[in-house]
Amino acid sequence: MLNPPTADTPAEANELPTGTATPAVRHFRQALLWPLRLMPAPHVGHHHAPWHVLREMGDASPWREEVDEYTGDSSRFHERHYNEFVSFLPYVQRFLYGEGRSRGGGTTGDGDSPMRIFRRHDVAAVRLVSKPGDAPVTLDVIHCDLYFFFDIDVVMLNLEVGADHLSLAQAQDILYRFGRAYPSGWEADGSALHCMASVEWLGADGRVLTSSDAQQREAFLSHVAQHRAPRIAAHWAYLMQPLVSDHSEDAGVLRYRQIEYYRMPVMAYLSLDDPRRLTRDDFVRLALVTGAGSSDAHLPYAEHHLADFEHKYCYDRFWVNAGAAPNTRYLCNGHALIVVGDARSEFFCCRDRGVLAQFRHQHFLLFLIAHFQKASLLMFSDQLVEALKRLDIRSTPSVKQFKRAIRASFERFLRFTHRYWFHEISEQAQVRALSHMCATHLGLDPLYDEVKARIADMNTYLDADSLRRQAATVVRLTVVTLFGLIGTITTGFLGMNLLAEAEAPLWRKAVWFGVVFVATTWLTIYTMVKSQRLSDFIDALSNDRLGFRGKLAALAKVWRPGAD
Image 1 (tube, one colour):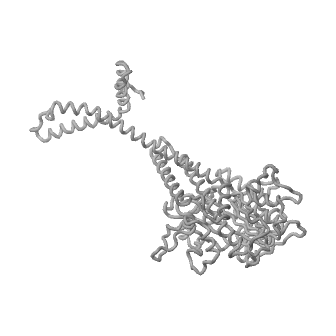
Image 2 (cartoon, helix red, strand yellow):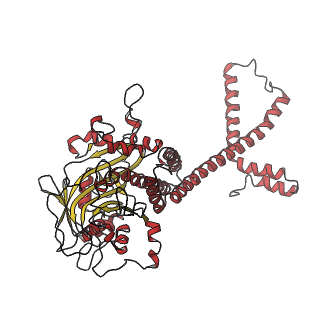
Image 3 (tube, helix red, strand yellow):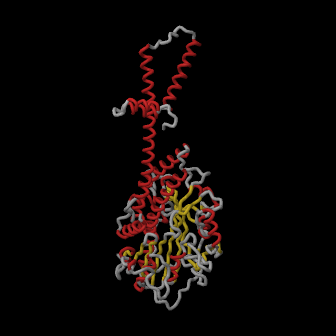
């Protein structure tokens, strides 16, 4: 078994404060997962997938498609990948890994793969300063990925960072402050609220690639005032390039919009000297990601608010002083999934078979599935709102465009339901329990029912509108047929040769044909114009309770201006 991982030690050493009563964090991992909505580009084909666009950019983009252990060289496929694969049920395996190789030996086509992963390698580390005056903390960037999904306009940024030898307070502050797309406000002295005082992306040579601009209050204020949309902080905007914010003035083929809260969903792995030394206050702050408390701090919220904390947010199956990984505790609030364990346990720190391997593989994927489902449902909801905003019932093209948009949303939602929506992802007790905790806290089932009901209401409205239009057409045709029947029977009674022109010259026959054709056409069109009023007159005629005068009045309404 392995000792606590040290291969990912950051370029700059992080010093632990001395004399602390809380246990030190011997190894720290944080994985941020940022769901975003991809916006359609007017000059890019509808069926031109975003990963095709990134491929075609070549060297103009830092992102390269990741050939992972499942699609690349089989020599890279290790036991931890096998353990990950068999943790999930077959239909989830098809979602995560595709169909693989066909029976004939060939690989499946491009459209068969449900996910496409792109990775950038130019960002090697990140240097953080929590508060002005604090010593900087440097974290290694383990990997930085973009996840694209077939048939769903959602992209997810996944950033995993790690460090050794942090204090618990430093780890809590990083969890609380780092994963924010923009500041929520500013202090009186102008410092960004709840954000890192400084964030710098570092290259492999230690060079600063870009830094945060969260302290530039006026830039964020003016952007919201102009666009009615938040401005993405510079360091996150840099990481996403060449994808750009939809409200940004930068040119970009691939554009995205925020779809969830500005705090990114977060996962964390903390191996501690002795996790049993953590207080209930420490666990509450970790589970709810509230940041580090002061030295004399107690619970961050009222006691009655946290009365059911252990039942609601803790998975304590392994919170015992026994087993391969003793004193391991999982904390989940939907937005965050935290695992805390003992650094002295070889299994807890093992990257191949232990808890660290599970955290980076099985637990990450169950977290990704839950947030992908939520982001997709929110995307469907946004698309419905946008379709309604573009609807102008006085414009026939707008109505047709609205119908096409709703039909397309209904079809995509059906495909999402059958391809990506499932309640059970695993029969393994731990994966299943953590998945249920994530889904419950995120409210996935109520959100799914709400979006499904909205799309069904829209589709029902379109069906009802189509039936109404068909019924109106049938009424008009019935009226025309009824009144045309009078002329048909009359001419039939008098005989087909009412005008004896059988021996007339051809030009006279043509004239009579044209006259009859024009008169019949005009009469038919006029009857259709008046079909609604004539239909009301027919209803009045069939009404036994309506007198003769009432029926005459109904007939007079046929030609009365404004009778409708």
